[in-house]
Image 1 (cartoon, helix red, strand yellow):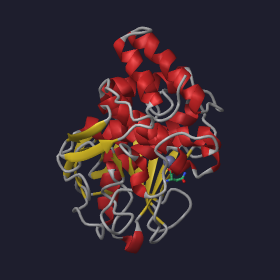
Image 2 (cartoon, helix red, strand yellow):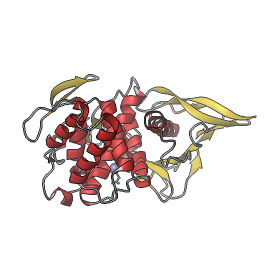
Image 3 (cartoon, helix red, strand yellow):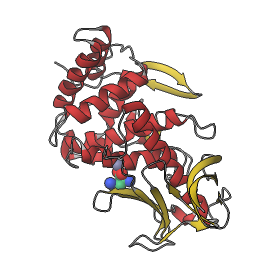
Image 4 (cartoon, protein in one colour):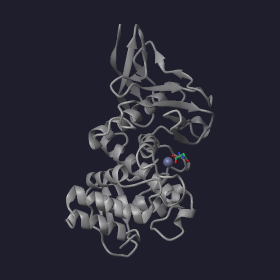
Length: 332
Ligand code: ASN
Ligand code: ZN
């Protein structure tokens, strides 16, 4: 017997979920045949190769604890599926490269490794187990962030330094939020926070905040000349802030039970166009306007061109997109 299956993943961060799996005889594997054959591998603390494809005699994966090595595999496989579904259903893009081909994931990279990363060279995603191997970096938003680096590489190709590097990072945070909201998982509802599940700071705080990026103590809220010389995970701040302002508008707001309070650079209020529209504007700009050296000023121009095509030049939505740029200090 050979076939397409729906397995059960007992994940660390997203509760019990359905996973795309494959049966071969009486053995099941983490192979998602309905999503480009995305496979999830266990590196078992190694740092090279693919390790072993997760396989087993039942179609139940993990037990929700990090000591069960299948658990991180379940989270990673789920995150890859959600990311696939998001790009396909929301943006009409099938697969990271848009060619229907699935990537693959590797979990349990090294020991106590506190990062996750995308590599174009293998077209693959890799996750560490976090400090003490107790909180793998396999949350929905981290998975979507990393795989979105693959989308950026396959489209605009934003160079990973200077202002384009900040825009590259922000693109991953923006679509990470998009995937998390679209997933609507009751254990991990959508938010404008990045990495709130993985406890990377050890005190339960998120890695990044999009409403007011400086809440992390290092990211910038607004553009300034010279922002291109700071770390790309901090120069992403203004573009993340743009996305929040464009989606929700300025000021205080509660979304899915999380409180935000987004100020603007010029103190003027911004009215949001809704998250779905903001995602569409950024995706269209990324895939049809941005190039490898796009900077903040060019990102403004590119998103306005995208907004003009989507909603009409001078429309209320177009004007609100422009106001969100003014709100982060990028203006005409
Ligand atoms: N997790 C990091 C990121 O995606 C890895 C890196 O520094 N590129 O930004
Ligand atoms: Zn990144």
